Structure formats: C-alpha cells, structure tokens
Length: 197
Ligand SMILES: [Cu+2]
Image (cartoon, rainbow, N blue to C red; front, side, top):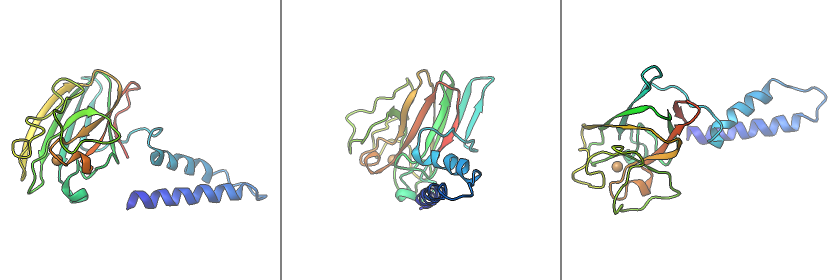
C-alpha cells in the first residue's frame, strides 16, 4: 500500500513537472527530486540502503544477514523481514562471505530459505532446490515438516557470494514461493550493499 501510494505520488509529480515545463517560470528544484524518487519504483538504478538486519564489514569482506520468516503478517506471514513477491532486494558485494542467520517466527508453518536463480515464476513444488552458491540453503528446504520450525526455529548458513548477478532468496517449501515467499538477492560487482526497495 505504502509503495503504490509512493508510485502514484511520484507519477503525479513527474506529470506536474512535465506540464510545468511549458510555463514561463521554470522550477528546477522539484525535477531532480522527482527523478531520484522515481528510481526505486523502476527497481534497478537505485543504490541499496543500509538496514539494521544487514551488517557489512568491508575490511573483513563479510556480510551478516538476519533474515526472519513471518515477522509480520504480510503475505499471510509467508515473507522475509516483511517483504514478499520480490518487492525488496538484499544486495551484497561480490566475493564477500555471507552469514545468514535464519529465524522462523511464523507460529504455524515451517519455512526455509535458499539463494536460487531469479525466475519469472517459481513452481508450487520443487523437485529439488539447487542453491546458486555452495551452502546457500537451509536444511530440508523443500519439506513442510522438516525445514526450519515455526515458533522461533533457527538455522545459520554461510556461503561465498562468488559471482555477481541477480538471484533470489526463496522459500522452497511447497506452495510458498509460488505465492510470493521470495525476495531479490543481488551480488554486486560495484561493492554496493544493503537493501533496495
Ligand atoms: Cu515458506
């Protein structure tokens, strides 16, 4: 809701600026602001922002991600830190070692997480969930009874984000990814890090 309102405001601002360009009095200040605000809506040009659940140590070349399933009731709790349907992207620098602390606060359902290929859509049932990077998936990730337990189950995984590219953090428990339990995961060649929304 918040996001779509923002998009509407930005679209209106751009339209207003465009209309104003024919007027005698130019208004240069709003134009750059509108252009900057429009970038997150388009999804690719914006740099990532720091958030308290993604900790980057450039000296040690490590990233620690505290990823929580079901921390809010968004998407019926089938979300990662409140995000689903690819509406946010975790960004880590290429070559860094990633430690992902996963916790499942959904009171009912088992969840899991793996770094998988970014796809236009995900299957309801995964034959197997192959992580893009070795070790980048939680245990029994495709199981609705043996993955990370509801009510506070935890698992930590660690992997090297060795190859720059656009991937996804996906829950491969049956029916979860297809109903939106995935967000983006970018390994940046530029060294950018944080969360893009
Ligand atoms: Cu799930």
